[in-house]
Length: 140
Image (cartoon, rainbow, N blue to C red; front, side, top):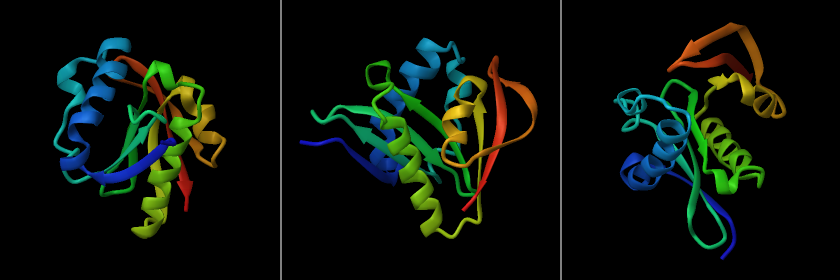
């Protein structure tokens, strides 16, 4: 089996995406669990990346308004390109849905990752869930 990425509804992604996000955001980064779960998962599209052995290792979501968020890659898969594959899949889905622009709030340490594919910082740094972020945008 090779590495794969799927884009699906929350009903299909829920269990695997929640496990990845819990590991990365709650356990690693200390985000309060009550801030991690919101009512925007259900109406969003979710990307899931799977390692060659079929293990889910990365996720992200595309909200109905064109925001990309909850990008998370498990430690074991960082540096392997899986995050980029998730981002590419979400950008492709946004293009098929006709979004003219994508918006995301990047953790400041990850801003360069998004800049490599054309996202540009808008405004100043701000704090979200105790972590420094910057707003970034990209025209499709």
